[in-house]
Image (cartoon, rainbow, N blue to C red; front, side, top):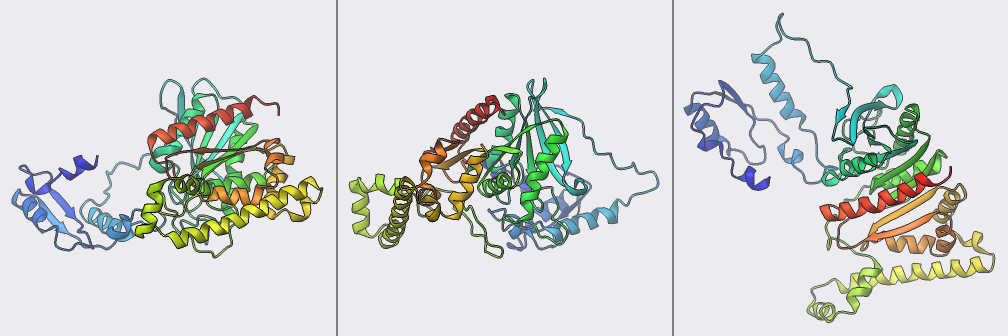
Length: 408
C-alpha cells in the first residue's frame, strides 16, 4: 500500500480530474502544494487553496497524541457549503441502517448503540446460524478504536463468532465512534467510568439473550477488562493481553508504551537468555548496551522475586494473608468467584516480572483455580505481526472454548 501511494503524483495528471477542487496544504511543509495547484489550473480545474492547521497532529504515529483536524474539516465543509448549498430540491439525508452485514458464510455483523442514552458505539459479530449463550466484550486498545492494532480485534471477533459466540467490539467513551462522557475528554485511557462502559457492553449482550460473559482486551483494554470482572459477577472469564498496569492513579500521565522490540527494558526471561551469549558481553564491553541501567532494573526485579519467595513460604506456614498485597487479593477474589483468567504476554514483556512479584506466592493456588499464564515469543507489545495475532487468536479461542464447555 505504501509503495502504491508513493507512486501517486498529481503533477503528472494529463486530464482534468474535476471542474472544481480545494487544496488544503500541509501546515508543516508550506509551499509544497504549489506545483500541484499549477498543474490542476493548467488542466482547466478551478482551484482554491485554503490553508488550515492540523496535518502534523493528524499524522502522528500514536493515536493517543493524534488530534482530529477540526480546522481542516472546517475549511472543507465551508468550501462545500459555499458552492453546493442545500436547495429546496436537495435529497434528504440517508437514514442510518441497522441491517446485518454478512461478512462470510459463517459470520454476520451489525451496529450496536449501547450504554446510557445509547451514546456508545460497538460492532456485534455473531454466527450466521445462531449463537450459543456466551457473549464476549472485546475492549478497544489504547486510543485505537474497536478495529484494534493491525485489525487484530476484527480478526479475533470474527474467529470467536465463527465458533458460535457473540462478540461485541466496543469503543469506550471518548475513543473511536463513542463520544466522550459529558464533561469528559477524548483518549482518557484509564478513566474509571470506562469500567462502566465495559459493563454496559455486558448489558447490551444480556439484552440479546446472552447469559455467560467474557471480558477481554489488549494493553489498556486488559486493564478495563480486569476491573470490569472485579466489579461485575456476571463476567465469568477474562482474557488480559499484555496489561501495562493493574492499578491506575487519577491524574497520572499516560506514557507511550513501546510497541517495537528493543524500545524498552524487557523481562527477566529475556535477560537470562541473553546472559548466556558471548555477543551480549562483547556488546557490553563496547558500551553498546545500557549496562548500568539494565543492572539496576535486574536488581530491582530480583528483590521483587525474593518477596514472592517470602510470600510462598508464609503461605505454607499459614501466614499468607498478612503478607499478600492488594493485587494478589484481587486475583484471589476472582478465583473464589470461579472467574477464570488468562494472562497472555509477549515473552519479553516487563509485566511478567510484576506478575511474579505480586502473585509469586499464590501462583500455584491461583493456577489450581482457573488462572492461566501464557506467552507468545518473538513479537511485540500489541502483537502486530500477523503470524503472532493468529497464534494469540488460537490461544484465546482455546481458552474461551473451554470456558464455554464448562458448567455454569
